[in-house]
Length: 66
Image (tube, rainbow, N blue to C red; front, side):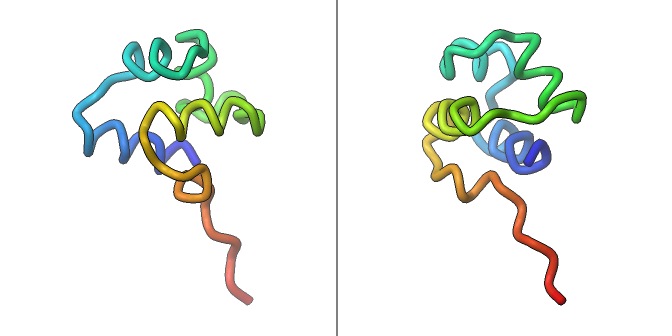
């Protein structure tokens, strides 16, 4: 998930400060989530996706294929 969020931030030329402000999440929450130190809750994921203008499904990695 972090890599998808980072990719979207890069694509839109935004940074973590912008994402924290736009999503309503704390900067520490955003930074820790993108560093893999914590998982986003469903509500946080929705806020991040909304801030980035994408579907939450776009940020969730596809399950491994068998």
